[in-house]
Amino acid sequence: QVQLVESGGGLVQAGDSVRLSCSASGLTFSDYAAGWFRQAPGKEREFVAGISRNGYSTLYAEAMKGRFTISRDNAKNTVYLQMNNLKPEDTAVYHCASRRGMRPVTSEGDYTYWGQGTQVTVSS
Image (cartoon, rainbow, N blue to C red; front, side, top):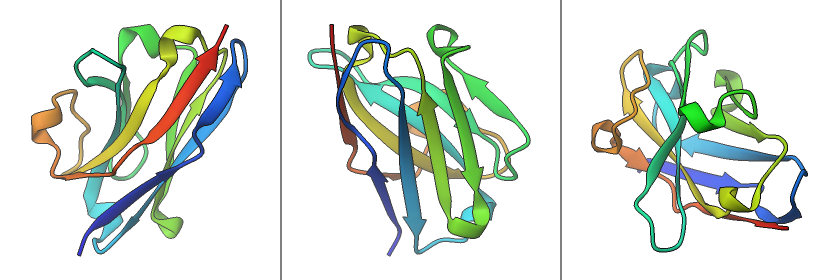
């Protein structure tokens, strides 16, 4: 059974930094590209960042470039999202996802496995 479990969310202040983790089990993690998505209240889920299965290639939504960094440690079956200079508009539930193959993509429909998400709330 494949499981993706996110952690690291919480209540922070604007300007703070947070690192989210996503721990995978039940799959050969190095065979899968990974991505982070987020869903704010009343809004559709949106792509945040993605990383190739070997970690050499990354992809970001335009609004996250320069503030967010995605990385992975295949030895630990974990993907990370470092978020710096957080803003109130970053408040959302953050989900990790995985898709078999080399490259990350922005479309959520192309991801097979999803975590339950972790809440990040940024106060002003």
